[in-house]
Amino acid sequence: MFYYFRNIAFITLLSLLIPSFAYSDQRDTSNEVEKATLLILGDSLSAAYGLTQQEGWVSLLQNKWYDENIPIDVVNAAVSGETTDGGLARLPRLLDQHGPSHVLIELGGNDGLQGHNIKKIRENLRSLVEVAKRAGAEVFIQEMQIPTNYGRRYTHLFTESFSEIAEQQDIKKIPFFLEEIALKPSLMQADGIHPNATAQPIIADFMFVKLTPLIKPGSENMPGSK
Image 1 (cartoon, one colour):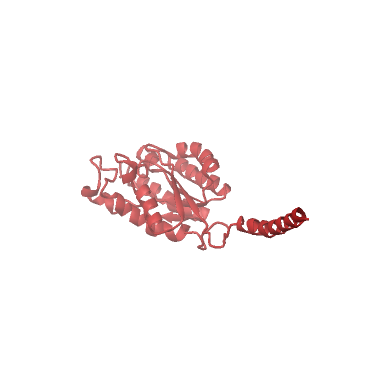
Image 2 (cartoon, rainbow, N blue to C red):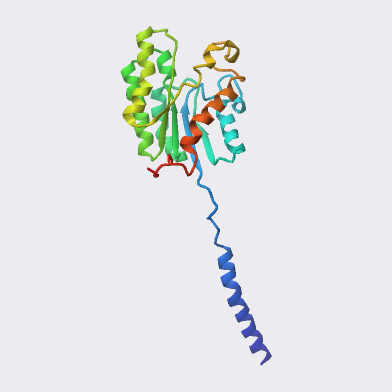
């Protein structure tokens, strides 16, 4: 008889505990914040050329978002010397690998410096945007500028390419982040093309102001919110 009552008591206690365990295993997700992932497809200007990765503006921007508790992760896929052709070859794999919510295309500068055909540059930029869009990402294009090595007409058509693609594809264009920096030798490396370590925090602050409202989770610019 003692064993009978003891078993009954054990079963009763177990029946009370099981729902508690089951309930405690359910995570409270009400306070979880949606996180965005920004893939930067760029060239040496984003790859911290001549510097350590930690000194580059991309790393500084990531740190700034962390410090501000803004849930945006950055995947820096910038490669020094990259052209739009190279970016097109790499982008599908990067999209599959990282599944970014947003993509910043910072390419075209090397195409322009090498005098590539303007029509071809525009075709490649358009294709980059379309590939990223098909993967479900919100896309931004970084305006690029080059010296007038190939004449003013070429330089003008090159710079206008970014506004044209942004308008055609209905995406945001980010202004050239070296427009003011390039005019100050104290902020440039010896080659006169790449920003030095002193310039990197300035670029990071500029990009923080431009990108945060476009990417910050919960904003109207998050994919699927339109």
